[in-house]
Image (cartoon, rainbow, N blue to C red; front, side, top):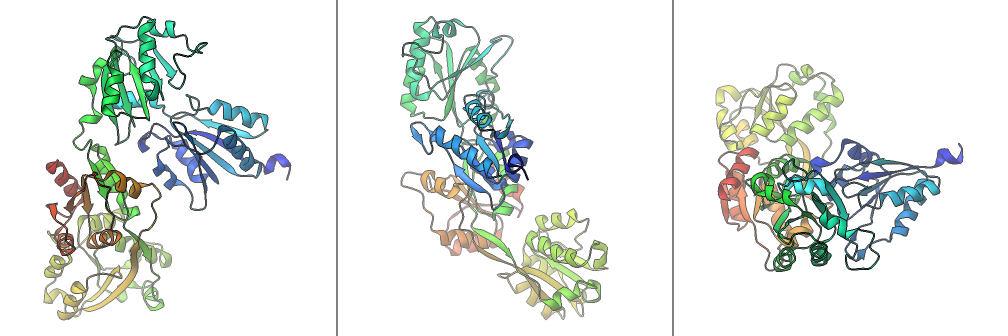
Length: 507
């Protein structure tokens, strides 16, 4: 193999403005394949979950005057890992070539003989105003848009920016990274001829659920920023297009915008609830309290999967986890779901039923109230006596259902397919944010998440809001009350949609 063939490749990847939905498909693909990830401060940390478990992650964040690594050190890292044969993804907030020093890094790679590729990203210069209800161009207000670095001191002699031309230029002016110098920027623009009443808007953490916006004019904006304590990271929009914000501000008008919600489901299960909440504008902190650990079947149980219907008449499923893990084991032995034979299925709730439907299977029995107690009540003695039941479940499952079936004359085998253990990782920094900033709401979807949350003893700093508790279902509520929690509301049904609707009604 030649020296060139041993070299890796560097991908200068735009991580977008912050919202996960605005990351390109190519960016995600490269993150999933990377050997090394070198990422910046403004990259959404949730993107790191897409990476392989063995990826090497290197934080190279720069926030104001605080730099984890110098630019020269970053350049050297990229070259070093590429020369070691690694596939390196350099994740940069927004677009790598829009005030991201991506061009400089690309030049270093070229001079070092390292192959590279650039992956454009959605720049915050356009995305943040859009999410704040400000189109950067409009036929009635602005036919040009100018991007300006806010890092340069507008008062220094020999500026690279033609301030006189910029001030008199009609159209939209967007300053990136200029909050600390905003007063000087506004004064310089007015000194060079810009009208003092020119509308100005700042958008902080644009496109994310932490977004904040502030409006003023060139004459007033600096004082408003100081009064509000409006800090970086933010972009500044100067121009008449800001007037459209009152009409077009769609994102901040969402029903849960400004509400911070803690989701306590397992990491794998949290995404569905998180997505529903974020689509409504909520700032979601996924703080996984438990993780699902699959357990191997006993040899005798696995043998029965070969001719399942010769051993069982019913499969009773009490959770989506049970469905996933049962069929994971089944498909290791048989390749066709029809090989289950003429068995019937009972399921507790809609999430479990949905998992069955994904396999084109129908639940023959499901209670209207989604608890194992209500499911047990549906089984009469005539249905159960002499029948053979397989109950796949977790190690901490309530024995009530199995005992009820046995009392009615059923032959019951319980297959323990998984255990729940405390989740100790905080890969996205959600726990740290909760301790620092608190939350308005916290959701519990099961007794196990409640018990494990309680065991974490997480308490926000003084002054940060303590979240109100929202429970999904009566069984979870009983557990929460035993643990000493006051419940603000219980969802009318044990579904994620009902849980979300309950929070909306409380806001």
